[in-house]
Image 1 (spheres, rainbow, N blue to C red):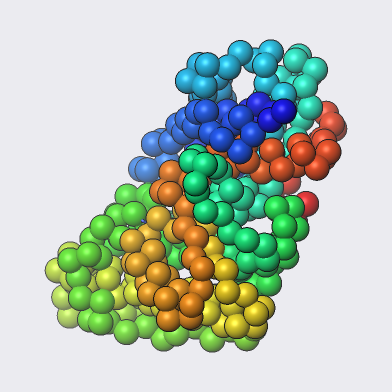
Image 2 (cartoon, rainbow, N blue to C red; image 1 turned 45 degrees about the vertical axis):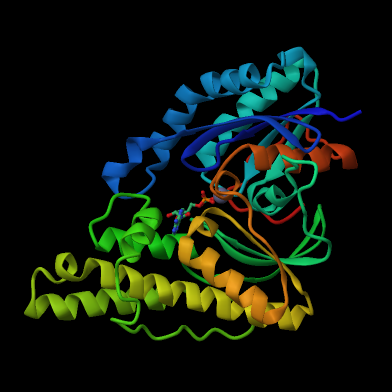
Length: 339
Ligand code: KG4
Ligand code: ZN
């Protein structure tokens, strides 16, 4: 019998809940917190408060949309890390109280593992899923990781950023350009009309399969400061070219390390995950690279790339099937290694 899983996500600035029947999504609700836009980044205290306000209506909406009563839920799964402590605490405390009141198992999910497992959400019976082992490039606002996925619960980080995350590098560039937070999607949109070879940025050099994005961000800052001395309206007058050139630099670099990792790990099945996989240039360019390398490529639908609770539900499903359980002493983990 396939279990009914309630998934709850509250690690950053999205309050989300989903109901899954086995690997199939019955509902998937995301409440985005607009409160942070005017601060140019997520304000942790405001995020926790918004989660507190959102969590009951969001879970309620997910259950209603799925047509599932709480008593029919087989397990309560929620993100326990990595993320903002206060935000995680809201989701976990709520999940614990449901688990206690309903006498149903509590399962704590690693958010990064869930991004990878989003590939296994089975919305249609004919859907292709990656075969193990495969290589996953997980690119989000807080993380950039290359993961060797040996099984649903067997993941090894083979490379990661030593400073900023890819999404963070987009968001910081967008902030410099005066775009609202989170800036990644705005930069993506504006870049479409720009010339991507208008400006050059030095390619970061990091040994092995790790990444570094802080140098790219700094070289953008220096370029802008230098040009603004001659032309105070430099950003406004060159915004599409700046966006396109910077986006190209980030995407080229991500793909260069991904290609190296696929060779090093000897893997030809490659997947993309996390919020930045919504980036149109990255999606387009990774497909070309996959063809050149004869990779089998997997990219989740947009709704499963950015933060959502369906991915928490699918990760919870695999953990549930494996017998993994958490108890009420479980604490959120701002930093977290893999299960
Ligand atoms: O996975 P996610 O929703 O949240 C985290 O776990 O961090 O990723 C959010 C990140 C943000 O940095 C956002 O700017 C970026 O994903 N992002 C994009 C695009 N859509 C979302 N970056 C570039 N282009 C996009 N289209
Ligand atoms: Zn995420």
